[in-house]
Image 1 (cartoon, rainbow, N blue to C red):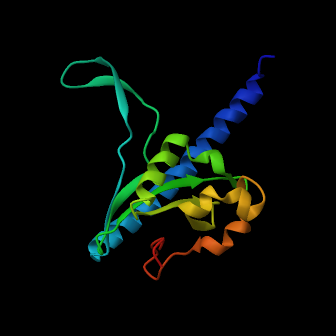
Image 2: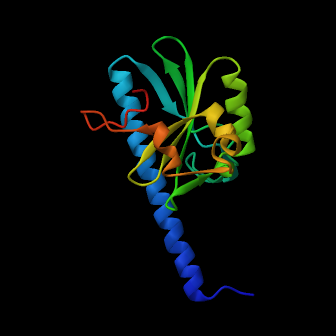
Length: 171
């Protein structure tokens, strides 16, 4: 069955809202990373999106597409020397699915967690934020009885903005 024009427009609108919410979360995290760097607490950077060149153009330009993401969104080092890496996810539904983290990202987080890196997932429910330790993210079914976490269930991991207006995921 072919989707109607209204269904396609609705899907496009929802997709645009989801992208905007994800970009807002990313900007909040980048501001926090800048704050942590300025204070000498951590140096954390956004992992560049892998791209695949489709064809070269003139003047060093090219046509490209995003390749499948394989690494978590952010990686860096705390002032103690400990590695830190985390994925950022946002949802508009009031629950976040465990499968929102890809298997490739999960493998990467697992490998680094075994080497004592600080690994977690930052989740935005719009106005509520949580930093879920990777070990708990992996155990959602055991902890919550299902493979997702609701806004209410995330309260134990809740993070807030500090007095400088910075999302403080290390508080």
